Image (cartoon, rainbow, N blue to C red; front, side):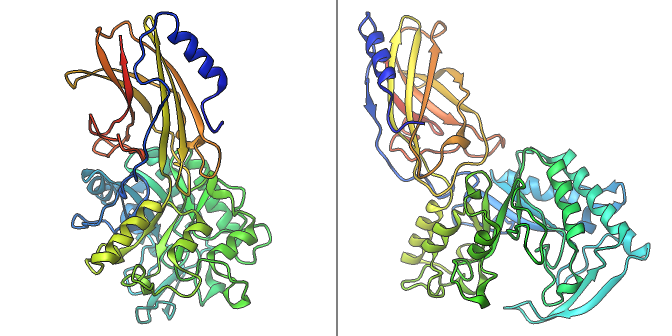
Length: 459
């Protein structure tokens, strides 16, 4: 990783260009332009629906475990498939969470477990603000039948969906109210650390490709939650812009950054994604001027402390934000997650080989967490893409706040017809209808939709 093209590369390109080589636009710098707010796998996220007009690339929803798990080894995936397909039909990846209990709703505990005698506690949950208290049904999380069902479900889910391009992120869910890994204020009814560990072990074993997100950062000395600090999990801040930034007050020890600090995982965002949800109390007014966020919990400070890539935020999808506030919301969506900018692209050709050297930087707050395919293409003077080359470049290595990355490639041109060509760059989305990742460059989409124009060369 180096900040600019290396001296060795410059020498090589100079040698190549001085032995009878034709190269247009050598040593070419590329201008910056903001990347779109609906770039893949980042930004603000609505619940699953087709009428969301604010720009977005992700949709999310909860699913009752009972909707898909009919027996200990019998599943009906149709309800979940319908959600994945609905989001994919709109070119969006899906964020999923399965749950067992939800105040005021039908239980998500599979019927076969209830019929087998799984103990259920029915009570009125008062931790439902801003909604009124509602009846909740909490299963006995220590029951061996439930524990076996949960681990079997997770392993089966992984076999079927790990790496599915429709699934952007998967939240651990399952345990506690709303799948949020707590039963506050009845903490004594929540799953023990032994059960939590069983669930986390199952997720880690079942998912090697799809990124996982846990609700609570927890270190080895956490009083309530089993240690997840060394696991391949990201985290979910469900009170973003309300209880995010560390304050140091004992009464606010549950704030998200405080938990990150206590668990020793403030830098985990470099390898694992941070998501979350804007707190409902500030949906309507977070982007007003001034903002209604509590003092010290404004959007920019929360983003700086979490490095979040995506946030569920119904406030921007319900038509309640207009004018300048909406403009600020769009800019906030752009600031979430990654933003990749190609600062320069040096091209040189010798006989039938094009030497490419590109400098790429991440001007965002987080990496891109998947190594999607990165390819180069040649566009002829008539606007036809005549040849493509697949590279081995890795997007996950481009970290924000660090020196730029040098990408180099030698493209064989034996199959290319003589003439002038434009060299293009694309990161393709594995979702068939998904939009490609777009770079923060003025020449993005300039000559071919989905492609970044790097420069001109002649064969």
